[in-house]
Length: 189
Image (cartoon, rainbow, N blue to C red; front, side):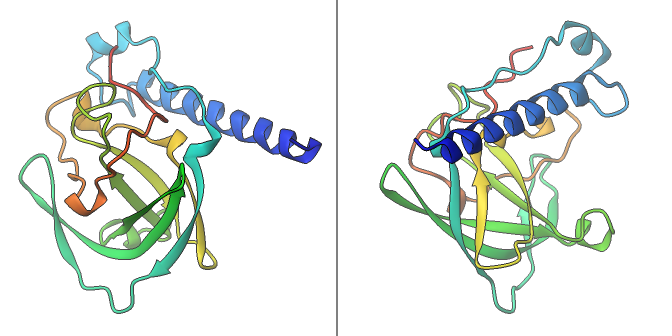
């Protein structure tokens, strides 16, 4: 690996460690955490897979032309309005995958989240090493026809920690038929 490659890998690891630190701080903060007061006292931090460069992929991004709104089912049997904003295609270990990326109608009306995209997915770790209901990745609208998807930033929906939340259920089109051993693991407190 070249010096530049080593520097990029170090920067990536630092970025992921910062993401993990911020996520843990959010869950310790009573104003932001989905955890009960009792669970927050026990919470020492999330468990994560080791950071792995192969799960940071540069994907081809194709924006959906004339996206039709649809209602995404949630864990509370409520439906939320989304568009399929685009489709991404990428490779992991030489195998090709496609996933839909969504945009929330509610969030795009706010200044802070107007360029927010949402990637819910399931994979073969769900129910064993990771939360059974799938995981999420937050993204922003890309400037071009590629987008970086970093599965090292995969996190659990709040429903993994507490009842009373209405979490989007990853559509079946976003099931990956591989183990994605990156990001957050089961929600052991």
